[in-house]
Length: 315
Image 1 (cartoon, rainbow, N blue to C red):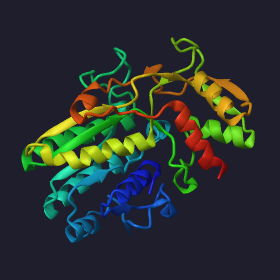
Image 2: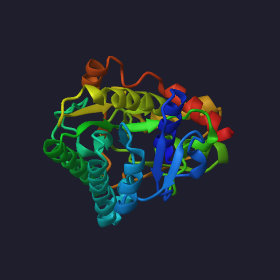
Image 3: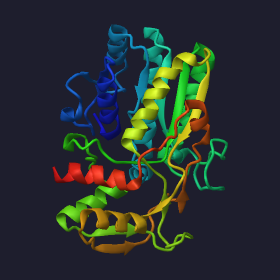
């Protein structure tokens, strides 16, 4: 029922899959769930209920998006992140095992890498997360590997960088509270005249602002769809890990200018010190995904992301 998951549900329903959603609606939105899907309101912390759902449905493959995912919040409340992200994933894996479900696609993050030692970042980059959010994602990855080794689970781990865009339906736009993502805040500033806070202006980049790699949410859904289908090709106990990104960086100042150009509105900017845990540059090397899947991870441009989001915001 969250931003990425809701796009994924619609994408798979459009392609004829029978989709079941499990979400506690703590941060997601019931109206974002495609009416063609069946919704169970359940937390991953409720293992007994989760087991009952999986044993009733016995899905072919599970796509696991559920997590707390705000870096700043993870620094303030680290235990909450360990409990929800790691404990919740353990409950899911145990419930899958009891139901005889052996295929998993897991949403991980570039946060597992920490400070970039080389650009673009490959899957072989050292894993040194700098905050509890990244640490919990890495812990989940390692748990999946251990579980696969013991039970024969087939899993694909997708480490994605920054996600933006929308299908155009305002019910599926990003709606986090508080909102920490770049493009939703820029569009909100453009639509309502709010001041946008630019965190960090002295990064060692071309314009002093942080540089990020953005992938359109529909490209991300396409990648998850391909991964879900191809879990059948994995050997028992095999886990494959891939970066998903465009391979190109966009600075925050470039993003501001892009939004101003597409919305035809001026954004008031207030400069501020960088946030804790914010790396200067994060750009993906998605070569491994392209070679394995036969498709690039990112096919839509930043311009397309902003135009699609602006259409949803105005609606």
